[in-house]
Length: 69
Image (cartoon, rainbow, N blue to C red; front, side, top):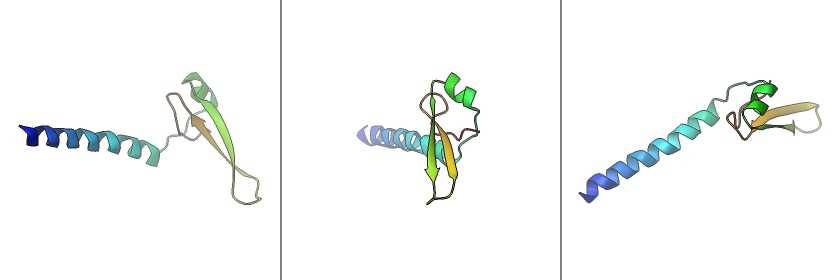
C-alpha cells in the first residue's frame, strides 16, 4: 500500500514541476493591454552593457513571465 502511495505522490510532483518549466521555456507574446487586463504589470529591464536594448515582461496575473509586445 505504501509503495503505491509513494509512486502516486512522485508522479504528481513530477507533473507539477514539469508544467511551469514548459511555460517558462516557451513564453508567448502578449500585448500591454492583455497583460494589465490579466492582473499583471509590465516590467521593463535594460539588457546588455550600455546598448539601448530593453526587455519587457508581464509580471503577475494570468500572463506572468510572458514577453510584452
